Length: 246
Image (cartoon, rainbow, N blue to C red):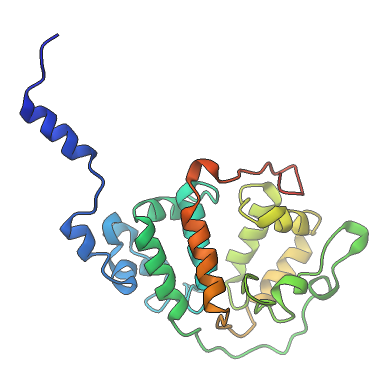
């Protein structure tokens, strides 16, 4: 077998080097730069094209990111990158960034002010506040708060998200296409919602005032670090037919 030229071996080794180059580092220097440029993933992955210049979302199907919990945002980025939360667009975007860049951009969006919005006086759907024990539906407010602004650290804010986005997420939880919830809580919670109930929840949440995350900084950082540290191969992939998340 002929020996490969040293120059060819050098090119091969260089091609395998995944260390960010000077250009990549420049495009990942801050969360704002990543959001506006797409970071090392390139301009086609720029966050602002879907989520707005100030993280306000597009008001249709792309969620607002401004003011959401930092730990929650980074966990979603890590789950997109690992495939635990598959999405045609966001999986590509997250994989175009290294773990440090995902952390930086999540922190930047979390620090942006939640957009101001007038709240509707409409009452929440009854299923939101009380659930339905007969059908095994837990009250949404137990985790997300009476106004969708989260019920404490680690409980996602869902207020002021586009109705179409919320409805799509409910559908993904029900079908098992989204499965990155701890212990399968969301999959179980929405499994027996009717289409009418899901639409009522999504429409009502879209009218709620945008909340700003005020989670304990160390708790949020712990969630972020935990999400980033788990190797992709060890992340649990749950079957959609198991409500306990196993």
